[in-house]
Image 1 (cartoon, rainbow, N blue to C red):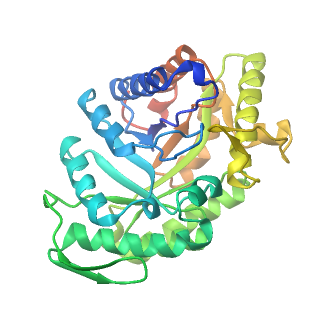
Image 2: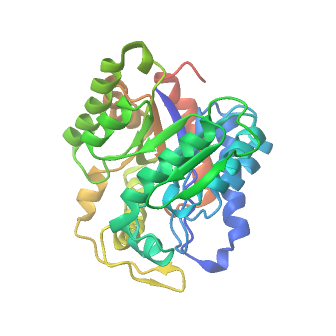
Length: 339
């Protein structure tokens, strides 16, 4: 099992400055590259102060310029917000500028607040995503593509430059049945159980494994990435402090994911959670290195190929870098041949 750091920029205080925030994310990427992580993951979100990255392909190029080996995953790009006729060319350029380390993760969008304000409400985002994905794949693989659909109508055109090689696409998807069908279509998969229990996580993995087995040799290259909030702690008190910080973070996340979407001047209002602090703790992997090894064992045994660590929920940058390094030195060697 390989590991990725999710560069999920969290911006609870405007005074901190976007320049400082993205320097932090870049520093985490450089650390991940140096310590032998397989990948770093970049979100796409607009108009809000969590998971805040409105320009993921630009950031991927910046990361590539300061790293050597680490893969760079868009996790995920919200396709319905882009015009595929221009976006396809941007993807090709990003793949070239990142020395072909780009793994294009795509999704439909999840936060009603931003999707509504950008003109693609969630009730049409699935339909538009499906057509956008089909258009993108056609433009990346064929020349003189024309289209006559609901959201795209255009005469024959060829995006330039042409891809140098096939650009891998990863589908961001949660529901086990959808994971199964996306895998059968030949996509890498990224998922997370969010607040689901262990059985739900096993169902997600099982859906991927079933489809991959049905594909036979055609599916050998496909990978499953699973994301969780993950952080190392050095004591019970330290663990409790970080769990409280993550709980506070999710009071904003829940607001825009399942809640009313109350955002003021770009800042998501924290709302009381339906989940208790103890329940939050159960859904996180915040613990000592030895406990972390035990917690991650079931993921590796179940067949997760890449574990994506969401580590940005308000902890100081110095602590975050220490956790990235300690995890690489004390936890990763138990699951991968990298050290």
